[in-house]
Length: 225
Image (tube, rainbow, N blue to C red; front, side, top):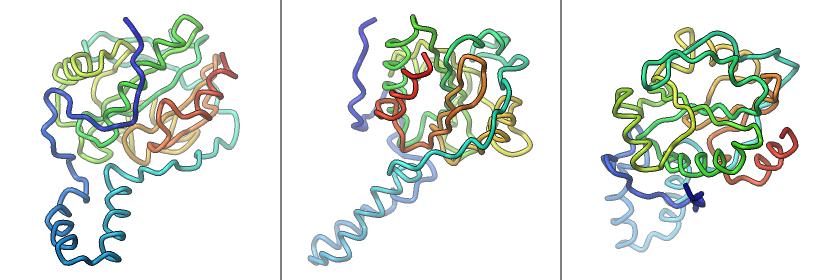
């Protein structure tokens, strides 16, 4: 499969309702039209700034969350894939791993394309992406496992492992994300990224504004491979 380059431009994938669930910028369209008509330049500029930040959390690149100390391997136990098959997480020790909490109704959902490209680029070098759909972060994953699988494959050609929908924050978080949260902080929004070295230890936590094409993220992956 030919690698596709993530452009960073939002698109409307098949099955996407066109509504970014729970996102505050959606209700601003009428206000924006009114302000343009009234030539309120100052207010318009402020609104556009809010819209840019509110698409799905803060769209600006955030500083990495610090990883205070060596965590030990977080790749313990097993979790179900979207197919229902149990997957032993220890299988991924020996690889450089990017763990991502995902959602199909988020402004960052197009990052799936970049994640797939990153996976295709490095999979033969011992790198993988692990996707974890979750609705608890922002209520933006309404689909069930079968629907998530179809959505990701049809719209973004996702081939990297995708796990069953689960919680990724709080006491109900799946065991992997409990360990990730303890080591590097819980996800602040959808599409947070946890980079693990070949020993399964967390080395970086990137928030949602750091896309799969980010030079710093890619340089760090290259260092670990």
